[in-house]
Length: 347
Length: 267
Picture 1 (cartoon, each protein chain N blue to C red):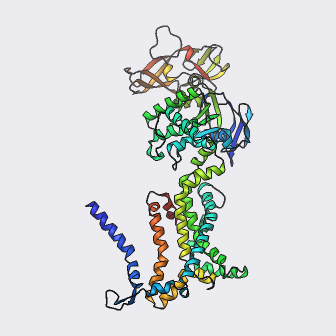
Picture 2 (tube, chains in turn yellow, orange):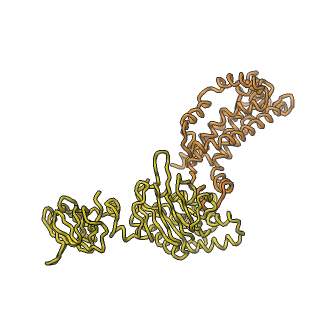
Picture 3 (cartoon, rainbow over the protein chains, first blue to last red):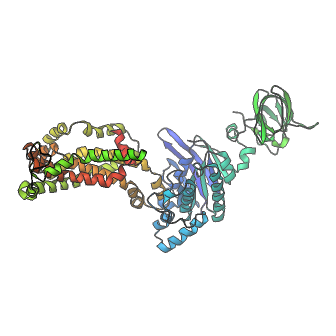
């Protein structure tokens, strides 16, 4: 296991820049998610780490040593692909033992380690089976075992859960997490699903159009998004234009008090943002930061109610209790908790 | 009911494919077979005995056809495999032009191209030579090899090769353990096709071989035009044998699910 550093990593395809000056540090043993919509450059970055794709410019370091000139097979960066998981002409055991065979390890030692690894992915005794006899979930686990058995310096997973149904996805997620913790292997996985990234990763690198938007712990993407776009990707579109003056924001619906130790935007034009689940629908008398909003729509979601509101011309979404009832067109009072107000830069 | 229908169709297919060969088989053992007799009136093994003699040149033709077809198949693989891979997995300038040019030998009658090639081969001293005949056979063979194999490569993709690379396999090991085993069934079928195409060439062999290189179709032809049906039948049976063997051994690969046949969809 190694630390991974990407320095000004850039990849162009003709006139298209797939990855643009990417700078990233992954600590040894860390589990990092590359998150973003399809075509944002996350898989391109993964392929550059493996050496299957050469960067146009920039550098990649494993344990502070540049490996840019090291060929794929000597990097120890093992990639598990989304499709075409197993070698179809080999048995499960031969699949898992492939990497060890390439290292020239003795047959008996390979068999021992293959059995050990199949045990770890909860497929004991599967070594003799053919690849096509396995279900999708089992194939995924064999592919994982095949990658782990060589003790990779860094494990790269391309959408590891994309082709699984909901139940298997949960199971596989737990398995990846527990094995990754147990073996302490530096792992990078690619996903377009923000929930998956949040639940699995120590840190998330969010990319749009080949550019890193934010690299942070999952919590920060909810509570401290850097831009409106990042907030939007994490399903927060509650925005309100205002002007910050110290601890106060002047807005069209009145003054709001903020926690100056929490926010990072300086005085001047800002966008006030409060997550849908953080807005209080039942303010108590004397609460500060109360604003008026008009109800546009109410949708029952089972566990909660989603209410669409008009806040000074901006459309907000707010989560209320499941049994909450309001009439469309009614004016209601919301309270924005001081500690939950986050400020975003305008435009 | 459904099962019965399947049997009817199966028997129908067998009749349609075997029936034309059956009279040949009877002819090859006949001495006198005149209308309206249903079977030969006198039987004989004479045609087969004649075929075995060196003066019939059947043995020579068979050996030449075999040698040419093997050489052509090997060269089709050497040229066609890299080309098929490039066409299937890479985008490059002029790709559609290359694909179109590959189709040309299948569309244009062989005799037209061969007339032109003949002129060039005379200048290069390639006429009347074994290698010249092999070269001219490659023209219709390579397109089939490329079409079949590009479909196989496109279906196989590069993910498995890339996986093997990241697991520590160098380029040679990837080829040995991943690429070749993966494409082998398709390669087998494509090779047998090129073998059969070369095996069946007549006009091109006559023009470029100039009667010096005698192949089996060239031995067969005079017997047919000379109305020596019994000997012609014996030679045709020898001629058709490889095709039957090939179909028998590759039938499993020609199934609907196989990617091998995908290449023909583009013809």
